Length: 255
Image 1: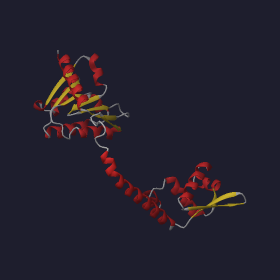
Image 2: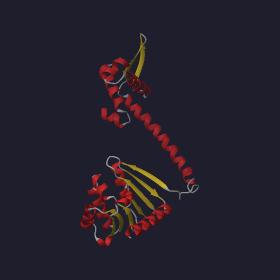
Image 3: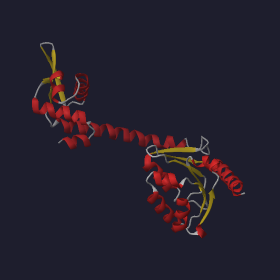
Image 4: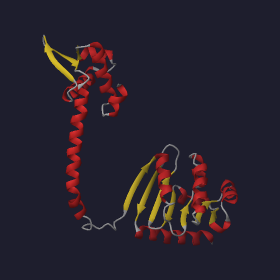
């Protein structure tokens, strides 16, 4: 019963209060709140919401407001009402679609599109996007140690394997560490990757975040453990700019 109520849109607190009323009968909010471990104001707010939804009734007796659960059959009525409301809005949206489509082209869709993805899954989503399409090189500022510290070494390795199977080439600027050299030696064939190891630690500021440039996109990944997120910028002009900056950085660091 509780699980079904959650599935049709009731909150856990609403389910808790409704089930308590079914078990205990008509109660004032103060008594009910003690039985369900909620403060009185929270219990009262939930009860008022359930009254509006039609599954709880209230009445006053000797100046005190009492609440009771209505017959559970009224839950079906609540679902039916919600279904009719959703069907109405669905019909309204269908009617509005031609008008919405007519708006396409009135705005400059060449403006950069920026998407934000939170957490480890967000980082993986952004990386997964780069496996779709990507016609030429991946240009990457690659803080490999941060991938390892974030617990993403295996994911990065699997990502690289898929990328190589799809015959996508990597051009990466990487901090020169023993772990980095060993990782690329063991996992990335020379013919499919071009790695520039940066020994000068004063230049390692460019590795605060991971940045990947491919097609018309720039992906920025923040990998500090517990604060991970990804940002995807879709813009031909911005991608071209960062590609030029990458090439200039590559030449400057290679001297």
